[in-house]
Image (cartoon, rainbow, N blue to C red; front, side):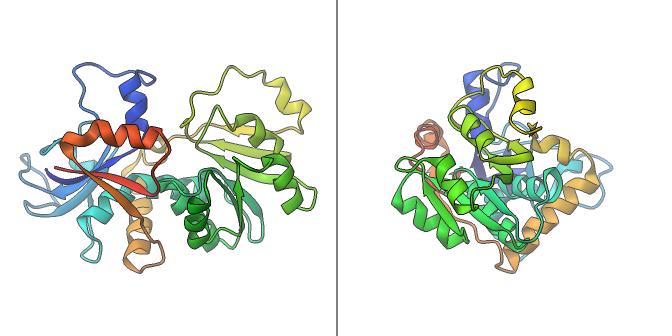
Amino acid sequence: MRIEASGVNFIDTYFREGRYPAVLPYTLGQEAAGTIAGLGEGVDGFAVGDRVAWCGIPGTYAEMAVAPVARLIKVPEEVTTQQAAAAILQGMTAQYLLYSTYVPQFGDRVLIHAGAGGTGLLLIQMAKRLGVHVITTVSTAEKALLARGAGADDVILYTEEDLVARVKEIAGGEGLPVVYDSVGKATFEQSLKCLCPRGMLVLFGGASGAVPPFDLIRLSTMGSLYVTRPTLKDYIATRADLVQRARDVFRWVADGSLRLRIAHTYALAEAAEAHRDLESRKTTGKLLLLP
């Protein structure tokens, strides 16, 4: 494939740091969109020149890449290549979290951390499709405006407010059935305290670092809580799951009901700068590398 846009994600920083093991030499990048430049023998259903997107296959910080045809998704005409690169990984992540990992019911209150980030903005919009009341956290007033623009009902500036107290105030003194947490170490304890009895913490990232070892008996003493640590690859392990989730995301992008914020683009040679910006939490929305 000839890569036209590659997404930058926190998982890339985990591989760079060695938090996730990799066999060297290793090319970073898990998500891209572009055009098929060549096909192996016996490939059906795709042709040279098709626009495609893919994720979960290492090596997308590049101009050219190879990927198994079983992991490719055709990009609809109504979706640009940059939109496809921006949506395929984070969009399917938000989709599986809300439609498979924990499915909130109409009217539920849910907490989504990092509401102005790429995945956070998509989670907010998809949660509102389900008719839930979205509470989210951000670090600045500027990010709060973005989260509200995506549909968040309540935005908590965690740098200025007591998160747990504010959540309980919003929820009328009650806890929440679910917290979607991509931050990890810095928010883990607070996330647990925001849950109601038998509530679930969906920990799907560690932007602030890995959560330290945790005594599971505390889940009992805090109200028979659940904690899950899902990852996208297990939710798109079959071709059917991959196609269904990608089609949902691209359909919503095409009809305008899922808005993407591609706020930062970098030349491929500026990948290090993109990582620094992402890890400093200075950015909002999606970061793309353009070869």
